[in-house]
Length: 484
Ligand SMILES: [Cu+2]
Image (cartoon, rainbow, N blue to C red; front, side, top):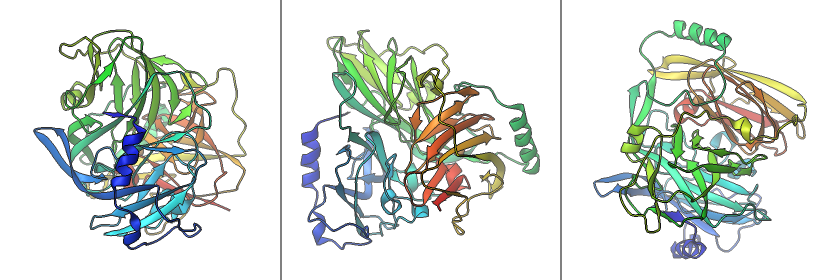
């Protein structure tokens, strides 16, 4: 289990080879090269022992899943050496941080690749504080051995200037599937989001379907599931004491799945979404996380026993998506009970009665699915255009200092975890409800629903926007923003 232990992390970092002996390539231009890196990450094939009878070979950071927890300090510059021991170019993206385009880790923004069997030294100032993560940003397309289908993901905690919240212990949980394969259609949960579908968007979706008849486009399914690289019942349980306040930092590191998490008999008091403190700390029985979303929640341990903290999907839990929580002295077989139906509503964490600042400009984006249009894969368009990796044409030009409202209309039945690089955004309308004060970098947009969020153009440089569902982003669901 990944509990925090600063000393073991530092020890582990020190045991890694120092970069000096290796060729230094594609160094970030504006940094003076320091003597030694603060952190070294090495991308290479490795094994994940999900269970003794399920050992998976995939690409990892530092030979482990998840990659090492990096505890950074807000505002304190770091140097990171990233080695690529694979045969293909790689990219390491610092998800949720306000850093320059050349180190953010997306080639669409101009970040150089880490060459095969080469390395890249980067340096940046971590911010904002809170729960972030790092992951690969290459485009796997139809290759399920690349991109986020691999084990390339690791948590980052950027320590704030001042500490928040009262808790006794912190635990990081990284949710991830393994052994992907394609199928036609899937069985993802769809009905858990607050709000109702729009008739007009359903009509647009239907028109698109009539143009693209034929079998359903490919979806990705998985054989094995785990938390921190262990299937449910494997590895160490989370051992707790009655009355303890546990702060769970949960990351959905999936390539495209939505995850849920419940702990029978307990409530989660949500203190932060995507690492950013929420204005209203509400208690919920279930966490729902779209791909790349993070939730920080405090659970007061007041229901002794041995419990399964797991996904609501019986099938996914049976294939490993869960972890045992064991009270001191409890023993016995881990128990699971299904929570009562519950709708996930981002607005309950917002500031009641407040109105968001008015935007300087509103940009509409209509999302349409062209069923199976790309050799069996669904094609995605934003305002009628699928992103072209050849053209790399910016869709929106923003001006520094202005506040932009993006209004998304989803004419498909899929849920889209929308992600903006290098900036945070404020939710202003979700599931038909106005809200303010919830700051995120990924938000789930429900099937045939609308969502609106505002961002301030305050970090000049090419900026990527995309759906974090790997299959969607690779087949059109991306847009580049540039600064005037
Ligand atoms: Cu999507």
